[in-house]
Length: 553
Image (cartoon, rainbow, N blue to C red; front, side):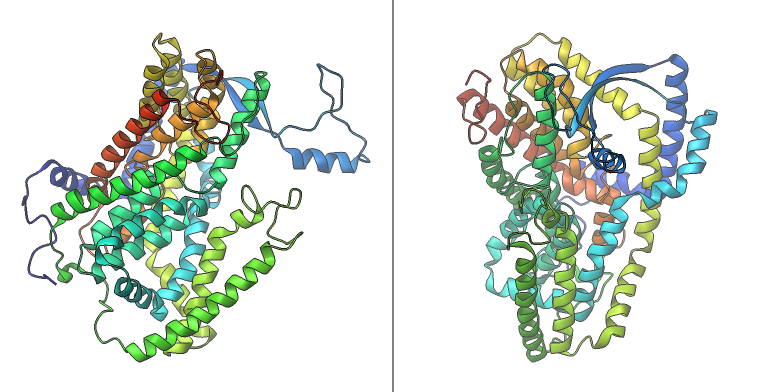
């Protein structure tokens, strides 16, 4: 295992575009301070645009507060009934409604803006869900790591998995991890970096490959994910309001399966032929964490793994008992479904963290590395302490996102881009490609698969329907444009976490390091996915079961 070479860039030295990106990116202020500057920038920009009077009008999808209606109905005796104004027949309360709204740019430097800044500061951070997700996920992982389970698992996986297949396995699992929403970022990416280190490959290459699988391919999967359910609900509300037939949640199923294998393969090729060649051999002296590979008690490790295996079987049996029987707590209380927007899917991050916690405690008991409840609590506290800098960064990110959204700047930018595409008189495939480009650009300022679709669905579904383009075709294009640059946008909430992981192996790593690593993935995955989309569209292959390319089909 080579250790003499530097971890920077042995082939190109200080030359090369990506090295320049890394250097420039790492010279920007601390990410926390950078978001302070960005808040100042949007404050000035919002003041200028508000003074000019910039505004847009758009149809938006509004969630209906069904639970609140039900509670009010019960309080009044349960006699209220909703009627369809067209047919006069009783109707169910819809999940969403379509409403025309005018969005004006709001001045963050106005009295209302300053009042919002001060009065919402605490609530912005308290409502920033990623903080709770990170803490809950890392609690279980921290116990497992402190007990030594993570290192033992990596060594065992590396021992049985062929070295040439390790990268593909990690990337492929990363693509599939979108079914668990945030778990891939918090668990798989650090695991991949450590796994690469164990087999003598550069840990930052493992980080980059797994991050690409989790983030840049987020819209693809072999399974139906919670995001698919939400996108389908929003789409169907637009379709029903326009008098069109709703679509099924499997509308992009075939396309998702093919995309999963394509994107995993592309990410693998970039990892091997671009990332690892650029990084070169890794010098373990750059590590800022202890190397667990030395002084391992293999007998204790084997005993700990045996304990954790039986603990895992018991945990899985418990989860199955809570999920599989009719009326089980983790099934949907109304439909009985397990997959989709269900308690089981909503519990995945907690269940995964709890699995690591249980297995970590069991491993610690078997390997005699973690004994008693006090040691477990200390392991969690130690993990939380290591996240202090990340939490401070999240504090400012939460403020920036809340203030940015309050000004209506993201909505104005999105609707303005939509209007430009609407006015273009070009063939459907060209318009679809332009749509993908617009989504790519807007993902830098409005990341998140669902929020942008809430804005775009009411605008573009009718436009493309007039061109005989089916809504599932538009939704497939939306997936292509949304995911690849997730790994580049500074507003991606887990980007600071990627920096934290990278600094374990390269002390001077920063935002520039991550962006330089991920640019080749974003570019090649976007190009290959777009090419697949164009071929799929031109050949007229159904996107999923009963989901043709055009409406007539």
